[in-house]
Length: 193
Image 1 (spheres, rainbow, N blue to C red):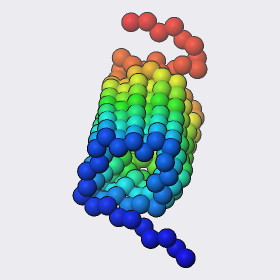
Image 2: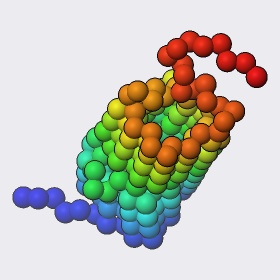
Image 3: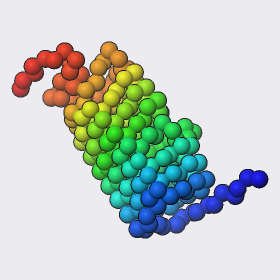
Image 4: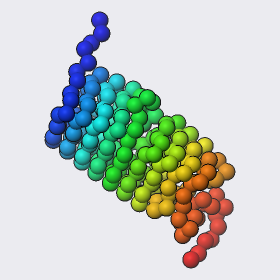
């Protein structure tokens, strides 16, 4: 017998600690989460549509089959999350002032995704499609781009990136002329101003 899915619509959740809890097969539509902790939670099969997360901690959260559609993360910690496990049919985000270090977007499709003032250190974007996305004032130190589709991606204000044009698709990708050394890292050139 199939369990009933619990639905929350237009609700606000504040200061709730969901750490290491199982929150499976729940639907959240137009909900707001403020100062909530999802540290090491298991959200398998849960769906978040048009939800806002403010100052939440999603570090090491399990997101197998989780749907995020039009999810907005503001000031959140999203450390070590494997977004490649998410529901591919409900997969659209925007991130503002978030720490997304050590996470993985391997093989995902993130068209027109906004990363604004985010730390994305050692985040894996291998085989991801990031067409027309924007990395605005983001730190991409150690981020992995391999066989990634980066057409029309805006890297003008991003820093510390290392992207090999030989192994990534870069049609009409936007870079600042003052920050092109990240495209030449493999040659170990001494580039000076």
